[in-house]
Image: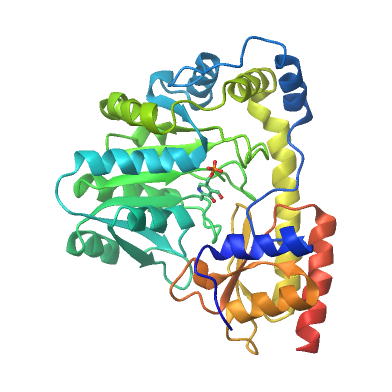
Length: 372
Ligand SMILES: Cc1ncc(COP(=O)(O)O)c(C=O)c1O
C-alpha cells in the first residue's frame, strides 16, 4: 500500500474533510467552548481591542496566570499556542548553545518534538518507555551522556500515550536534567484533562533548566484561537521575548482579552474543565473496553485526548488497518508508525468527541473487525 510522505494525521483527517466520515484522527475536540467565554468575546467586538497586544501578553491574562499558579506573572509569556511556545524555546536554545547536541523525547513521540530537530538538522533520540510505561532512569541518564542530549521534551498527560508522570518520576527527571545541565520542556497542554488524579507539576522545583508550556487550546476546546503560554526562569525571559518579537510577535489581542475576563470571572473555567474531564473519561472507558473486547491491547491512559492501542493478533500493519477501516467504514484514526519506530502495529484514536460519535465509531470498528 503506497504511503504519503507528509503527516499521517493530516492525511487521515483530510480524507474525512473531503469524503466525510468520523474524524478520530486529528486532536480536534468536538466539544463546544465555554458558553460564557463566547459571550464575553461577543461583547468585546465593539471595544478597542483590535490592534497588536503587548508582546509579552495581555496584562490581565498574565496577572491571572500568576495568580493561578501562585508564582510571579513576570515569568510568563503569552504566545500563539503551545506550538509557538515549544518552537520558541527550541529556537532560543539553538541560539545560546554553541556545541552540537541532540534532542530527546519519550517514545511514542508527539509530532513537534521530533520534527523541530529535523527542521534544524539536529539529532533526535527517541527514548523508549518500558512495557508498563515506566522510565529506566539509569538508561536514560546514560543515553543523555552518550548522545550529548541538551533538550528533553515531555508531556504529562502525554500524546499519543496518555501517561501521567508521577512525583518520583518527574522529580527524578528534573534532578537528572539539573545534574547533567540539560534543558527540559514540560508540556502541560492536557494537564487539566486527567481521568482521576491531576498530574504532579512542581512549580517550586522549576529552575533555569526547566521550561513549562501550556495553552488554552485543549483546556477550553479552542484549538483555533492560538493562545498559549510558557513559564521560564528570569534568566531566559528577555532573550525569549527577543525571539518571540520576530517570530510570533503577539497572540491575538481580542482572544487574550476574552480569556482573561473569563478566567477571572469563572474561577479559571473550573466547572467547564470538570465537565470536559468527565466526558473524556466516559469516552475513554467506553472505547477502551470495546477495543479490549475486540482484541486490542489498550495501553492504560491516565488523561489527555487519546487512546494508544496495539492491534488484535490478526492485524499486523497499522497503516493498512487505518486505510481499510476508513475505506470500508469511514472511520479515520492514525497509524502508530507516525509516533513511533516500533509503532507499526499501533493506532491512535482521538476521544475528545461527542459520545454519539464514539458510539458510532465503536459499531463501525466492530463490523470491520468481525468481517475481517
Ligand atoms: C502534547 C501536545 N503539545 C502541544 C500541542 C500543541 O498545542 P497548541 O494547539 O496550543 O499549539 C499539542 C496539540 O495537539 C499536543 O498534543
